[in-house]
Image (cartoon, rainbow, N blue to C red; front, top):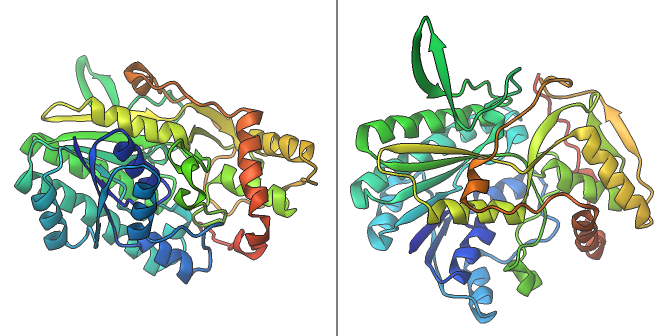
Length: 382
């Protein structure tokens, strides 16, 4: 297949691009380095800085991978994006081209505005580029479990059957975003649902929980192929951040009581979920939604896991409970359904001590690069 990966320089975009290339697909990778630029601007750069996208693809090809075509440009620029679609004629497009951080979206007015403009304009442009250039193309968009909030009922996979006054209908599951970033992801889904109904597009929306991990099968070929690994409060996901804090001797920062529970997923499984979604396309006129998680944990449970493995590796690990800077429930019901991707063939990599050990090993190799002052940046929801 011809697979177009938007946001291909990112934490998930890069391993996605090389996975499809390794499988023999024709791949084009697109990015404008927004995440790198924001990391530099806010002094929260990755634990290791990968080469630029052109160089990464050269290293990939030299390592025995296939050729990946690269286009550098902004997906919010419709002329650029439409030209990419017209040139490549993708059969599937994987849409990661959004500002990916909830804390960044809460930083200030400028950050919120950038998140709004970038995320919604990029998604609208993808829908139009598909319609005008390759209407049969399958859009696979990365969403987030954060759109659901923490309702006091089971979280179904995107849709819910409602019986009201004796009549029945099917609706998008009620959503109550936990940040402004998550609010834009709700709007993404609503926009795509409109275009699915109106134009008959094929869309899979993957509502993903926080991702953890460093390596995939393809990135292990050469350390220069590693993906971006942030450990800061802005772009670093909680488990990745906790492992770096443990190695650096910085107390693990649990917000409030630590009972906040979410669904988590290994980066290897994220890439596999994308692969399965592309291989099993949504139908024309279908908005298909999967909850892309494999396990649920509270923040306390994650901190205890990291502390246990870290101490076994000789680190002094302390857990601190901080005043919660976010507006969220610290004790709540949380039971998401996540069966759809397993039915397509996902065999999850669960969060074992061995998985944490492998993460610790990579971070320890790069311990001299850790800058503890990057970890906490004092971002508050109020």
